[in-house]
Length: 87
Picture 1 (cartoon, one colour):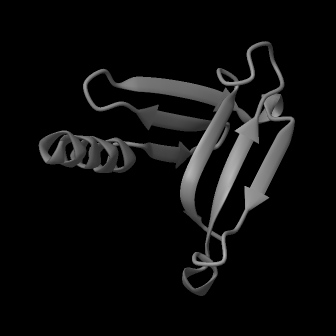
Picture 2: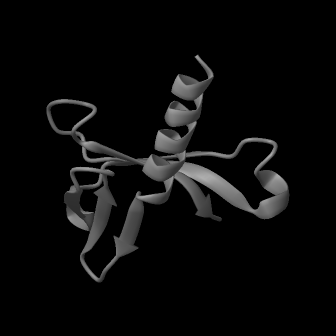
């Protein structure tokens, strides 16, 4: 049981560190995945909503969570969630 917990913990940490984003002139590029890398491009003109959430323990570090929504079919497919982003 302890070994399974340790493996899950390591997987979660790797998954978190392998998520990156890049803001270019015309789009948001989101890269994720540990074993199978995925790249998603979201042009700025397709963004419909930006949801910001700042947890109390992130406030001293000026960090927040952002969800960017393009409003297409399939809510999970058209949303990019950035966990810890500087305000």
